[in-house]
Length: 312
Image (cartoon, rainbow, N blue to C red):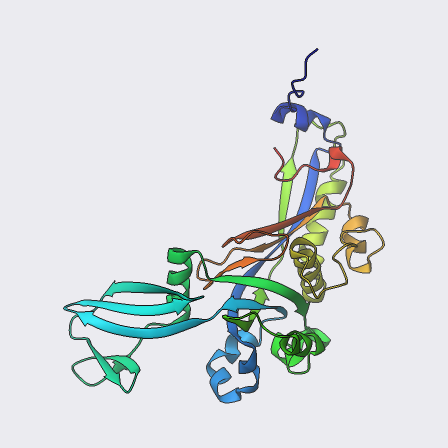
């Protein structure tokens, strides 16, 4: 008796089993971001330099990030060494200094001073990103995902968060020791993108170009409001955050209004990406392991002959 598993279908066989020779997937990705401690949403003065980015952010993630505490810093010739504490462990970041910079310390406030008296200090996001890469400990644990759009994009994530019951609830229930309640605001790319597969081995041929035209119609006629909701729903289904209810089990579905046009144009899948090189942490949840890059791909059809994206 042979207990060996059957050989999986080869890429050629997968292509031959596909239903249509033209398949489309709607793609969405985060183009820019802003991250801040939850209490920072009330500090308008500190937010002012960030507003140009925040105004375009309609997606927000609420979560916990390990608290990074500056322990000290010292200079060794042209090298700067900064010591931090994260979850009870000490970590040091070292870097070369530009000529003429000297480390100063005024009652625990460190800064770098040049020969003309100018003051500098490394960017907090850059330091966090460096620590994340070095230690593998700086992870954003996603607890809730939401959106704010309003009329023609008039509302941004900050507008919604200022009166957000779930944010207040998470705060009141308590933040794990050594962590900080943190917000990640995302701006989705301003234009749609479409992934298309042309499969000459498929069972059915698009002789009259109807499937090509349907994909192009979806590419050029998906509104920003629709894209925002699709992106939000895709991330919720992917991360399954603790405090979300809608979309965790119901996305994708033919019963959802936001997907009606995707089904009408017979798209195969929707894809939402968070692939930002300079995020200062990895993202994770109870069901997703910590990673710097996340691609949430959702097939819109259950049958195997329609699941053609990223599966070969």
